[in-house]
Length: 508
Ligand code: AHR
Image (tube, rainbow, N blue to C red; front, top):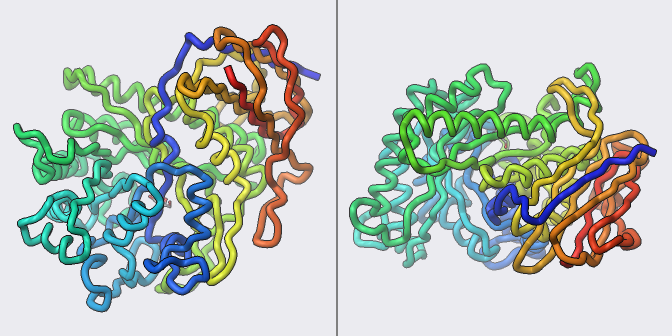
């Protein structure tokens, strides 16, 4: 059996994990909103129509922040359609997903849901059909106390206090020709700069102190590193906006594609590839920072990431209300890659401060509902749940002698790990993917944490890489393992089953 040595020292820290790294995303797409978080009349729905069964799984996932309302949807959305008396709200064609939007759910409902779920909202403004004025007015609607037509309208709509929304995405995937109102980098950079300026002014950010604190603005970066415009798009956009924004966004979905030459290896290469992608944008940010002579550091908001079989054909008819779109059922294989992507985000937490698992329910999501009925946890639910609840504090730098395999992206490691230490709870968490087809030995040497004591050890394995969960059974789930022996308080020997994800927790 091949053995990989992994060494970590508590003094060598990558960075602090912001809770926002474990964010997610709700778009007006398919059944994410309708029949997802919102379904009046569902047996578990509350007086506002929010599904209680979904809310309790969201709590189990420990998601601190949710991005809304899109996604591609936002680039054709007039936020005014979604506020005010329900019977007066217009029904519109949604040109992003070719569905019909009833606007029964809008900004005020989302804010209410966030409050109930104890979640920080992250709003996106329309940079496609929308103007910088529309964006500023939405900031006014959400954040201005009162005394203006727009803010008094919010008050009349049942929210006397401003929402104080802090995180704002300036558009979505504006580099993509699929986007409503797609722009060039120059055009978007200019527009985003002006939008940022007026959004900040509306928030009261002048020489006065803003009543709700400063906005955290996210400028749209590349939709994927496979875009022809990557990374030039990011450079140009940042050169326009660097001084006005706090984050550059990144998006990336990976897919198991039988069209690939080596489908399994290429898919398993995703985690290391995502790291390369982040490193390129880290360098781009550093370059622009030097070029514009700035002292401030722009960080990354990885506000769409997941596995998504984009090649799956659409079967639902056009212009349906809340059709079954993008309802990927995740396999065990998807879970393995997903866990590796989470490790990558953790290992780059010094630059990636926000992450949004896209999406939260039904649409490429960790949970799936039936109308009027049940909800189940997908395979990918579990790594997210374990890491979001436990991999806190700091990510610790790891040194590994893992061997590698060839993928379409370049080399990828067989053993993919992340180690986190939370100094406040004095807990240490290890997440390990074994991407080899045979079992592998691991020698962990975890120095400078004080004597370690094992608290928890779970593992996800399956003989069938295509295994999935469903409403009847959640068979792909972690199982508990016997706690490992710790030598000299810091050395641990493990055996990882072929193609598996393991999670260990220690007290220090
Ligand atoms: O999350 C699904 C879609 O993926 C989003 O609407 C878009 O931003 C991305 O292309």
